[in-house]
Length: 123
Ligand code: HEM
Image (cartoon, rainbow, N blue to C red; front, side, top):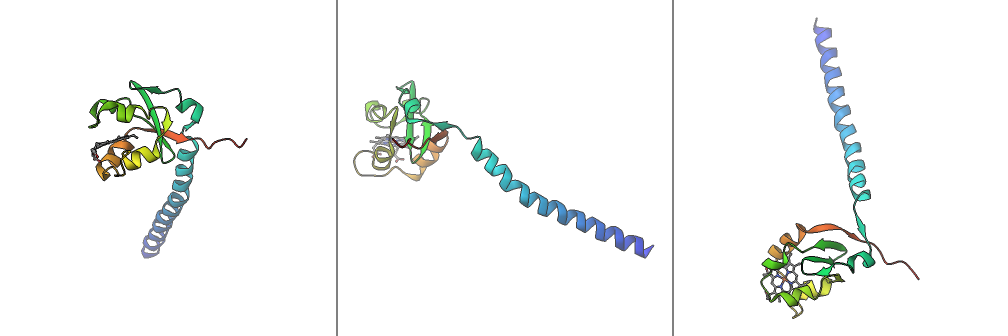
């Protein structure tokens, strides 16, 4: 009886270890699958979204659809809308007057991410 108890316990912990190690192998694969399916947006596609109601910007390698956010932005609208359809990292990082946005602005920005800016093709 004691032997049965011991062997059952050993098998149980072996199974726990197997799932734990297996889980460790599986999750990085899951992450790379997520990266592989991320939307790649070309500069050409970005450049088609230039209206306040249809405004995409590339900031630090990511593309954001800011259409829903623009009406809430605290500056006069044209300061931001002039960057729709463009690479706007420097404008975002400096607010065009040498001052960075707050960490709160960075948090807001993350909500509007729609994909990655595709690397430019070599000519
Ligand atoms: C890329 C073009 C952008 C420009 C040129 C720009 C410029 C500005 C300016 C001039 C102000 C007001 C004055 C000041 O606080 O110094 C401001 C404030 C602010 N902007 Fe922008 N902005 C841009 C994009 C964005 C985006 C994409 C977000 C977030 C989704 C954002 C979020 C905010 C917030 C939350 C404030 C209040 C102050 C702060 O938290 O830093 N802005 N921005």
